[in-house]
Length: 615
Image 1 (spheres, one colour):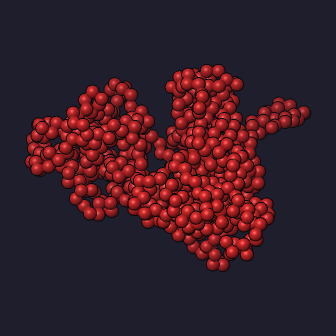
Image 2 (cartoon, rainbow, N blue to C red):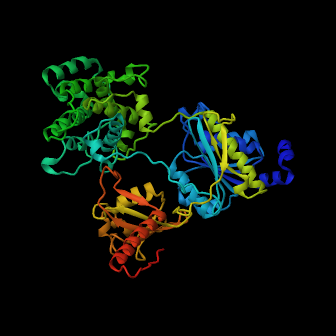
Image 3 (cartoon, rainbow, N blue to C red):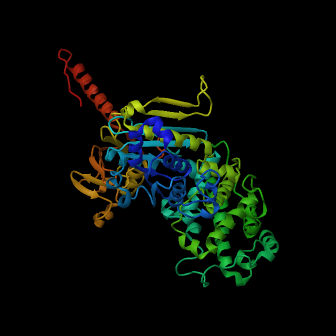
C-alpha cells in the first residue's frame, strides 16, 4: 500500500484497513467495486446479493466465468477478489437486503460505511432507510448506458435517496390496455397481463374478470380452463412427449384449415396429453384474438374510433397452432432480431404454452409464475402475444429484441461506465474514512456524462444538496394519500400504495391507536382477515375522508403519519387509482383552505379583519 501511504498518510491508511464496509450488490458495478476496495486497502468487507450468475452477465461482470453460471454472485465475487488481496476478509451473503430477519437495522449498525451497487429502486429505497436508521454514511451509485452518478447520503447533512422524486414505470389506463391500444407498448403491457392471467395468479391480472353474465368477456372461461389440474395430471412420472405428431404436422394443419376439424379429430389418440394442451392453446388463441375482438366490435366499443380492430382469422390460428414445431425460435437463426409474421407469432404462442405444460416442474409452477424479462419462455410468449394483438389493432409489430427492451425497460449496460462509477465510489469512501473534513465538504455528487463538457471533462462534480425538509423519510414524516375509500381494498392499499409506491418492507398500520395490520416475526395472524375489506370497512372506524393513520416499519426503523382523503379519481388522470402528496403539499392545501376562510370572513366583515394561524 505504499502508493496510498504516500498519498493519504499512515494514519488514514490504518483507518481504511480497520474500517468495516457493507457492499450491497455484486453485479456490474459490484464486481468493479469489490476489486477496487480490496486493492485500496479495505480489508473487512461483507457483500450481499440475491442473484445468481447468468450467461448474459459474463460480458461485463469480469469476476465471473462460464463455470460459475447458476452460482451465487456474492459468493463467487467474494472468492475472486480474495485472490487480488489475500489479506482481505470478504464475507459473502446470498440473500435479499430486504430480508429483515438477516439484514435489519441491527445488522447494519456494525458497519462504518455502506456502498450501494443495486439495480432497482425498491432495494435502494430500503437500503437508504437502513442507513438513515443507524446514522451510517451511504455511497449510492447507478448507471444507465454511458451515464452514471455517485453521491453520498448522510443523515441530517445531505439529501437522502428519497428527498427527490424518482421516475416510476409508466402506468397506462386499464381501458386503453384492455380495449383501445394504439401503441406497441400498450400491446406489450397487455401481453404481460395475459401471461399473468394464464400462468400466474389470475386475480392479479388486469384482464381477470369475475363471472358477470352477459357482459363477461369471450376469453375468461377458456383462460381458466387449464389443460391439467390436480385431479387431471398426466400419468407419467416426469414429462410427456411433445413430438408424437411431428411427422403429421402438415396433414393435421391442412385438415383443420380445410375441414374445420378439431384437434382431437386429427391428433393421434396416443398423444392424449399433447392433444389436451393443443386444444387449450387453440382455445386461448381464438378466444383472445378472434371472439373477444368480435364481441367488442358488436358492443360498439370502437364507435367513433379512428381505426377499428380486425379479428384474426380463426382457421389461420388453428392451423398455425398445430404447426407449433415450426415456430421462429426453432427455425430461424436470427429470430431475436427479425419480425415474426402473424402465423409465426401464433406458432410461437402455442409453442410456449406447450413447453410450459410439457414439463412436470413448470406445470407445478402454473398459478404462481411471475413474468421475468430474462426468462426466455416468458419473453417469447409476451413477444408472440403482443404481436398478435398488434396485428388485430393495426399496430406495428416488433421483434423479440425490441419487445424485450420495452417489456424490461432495458438500456444496454456498458462495462466501462460501471468501472468509472465504481472508481468514484472508492474515492468517496477514502475521503469519508479519512474523516479529514465533513462529508458535505470532502464529497461531491459526481455525474458521468456521455459527451464532454466545454472544458473537456466527462465527470461533473457538484456540491451535495442539504436534506429536503419536506421528505417523508428523512424530513417531516407526514403525507397525504387521495383515493376512493369505498373501492380500494385493504390488500391493494398495502401492496400497491405502501409497499409499491412508498417502499415499505414490513408495514404496520394503526387507526386511532388500534393496530389493524402488522407484518414480521411474531405478528398476529388474525389481522389477515381484514385484507379483503374495503378501506372504509376496516375496524376502528375504517379509513374515511380525513382519517389519520400511523404506518411504521421496524425493519427500516421508520414511522410516518398519513392523512387519508376520499376522492373519486379519473382513470386517465390517475391510472393507479391513488395520488400521494408530501407534507409540503399538505401544508399548502391547509394554507389555501385557511385563506379561503379568511377571505370569506373579510367579505362578510369589511370593518374587521380576522387573522387565523396556520401550522
